[in-house]
Image 1 (tube, rainbow, N blue to C red):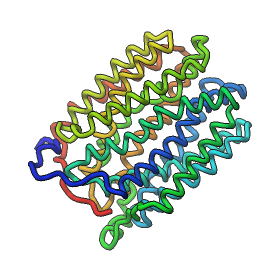
Image 2: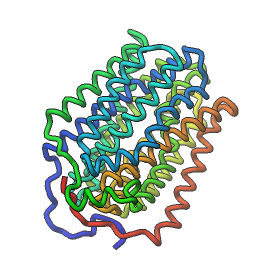
Image 3: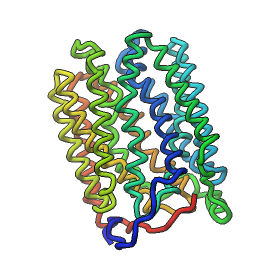
Length: 404
């Protein structure tokens, strides 16, 4: 067994687009939209208030720190109290944070970012663990691809909408929109067919054990996701800083975000049904090599158009890599500890966002461009090396079914 889910046999594939899964995906769409609409506006606000690229990185790290630190706690709560409650708490805190950003004081914004990070930890852990419990074993790659379409759609639409709102009404409008979308996500969780997502009986007892904080089976996929996603903020958060360094009006980025997000959506929509047919490690290697190509193009960029070409290549890589690392985490993890597994797995992305943003901000201020892109390439080379080292000792893919 090589870990390729597609080799499990020729039995009829189970249904995928059930009402609960659609509801969970809608919550994810609204939650990611609430985050992405402020993503290009927040660096602008920080720069307008007298900050620099380093402070942008610090503010992003302030968001990531509680999101990382509390994620194991959220995983334990998801296994014992229920993923639905954890997800609801997350989007509720995100709604409050969206409106709290309206106070234009740097110290307040940093505090709000910390609170926002707490909500983000709950939202991500709750949503991912709900998806993990709803995904049929034979279609985990495809289910993860559909779920990961939600941030792609949000990236396709919301940063441009955020910039347009900024251009017409200033920064406040984007933050109000963020709060409203998070409130809408609360309503879907409360009123929609979202399952409890709790491990009952023996599952709850297992989750209360001393080892409940992290799921060992998800550590390797989390590491892959961390190394891949370190580059993410260079295309998702720092383009306004890139534009400022080149003397380019930030409004020109209106073409970058929809093309980047549209590529994510298109590739995930087309590739989703094929993600279970190839060994997980080969797909991740393809993603790493494609991301290296995108970063190389971005390193040579002096226009938004060339940056967009690099972003398209990175989006293609992300479109296939993240769903597969998520499916791998589900494959390798104990079904009684799926909350802990998804908390462990999503640590990779959030650690990458925080550490990457802080690192890239310092590199930009100290060395300028293209230094961050070149360093990011080195991390992806490390990912390729890790795939070669870990692959011979990998665990076979699990075929267990997880009850929601």
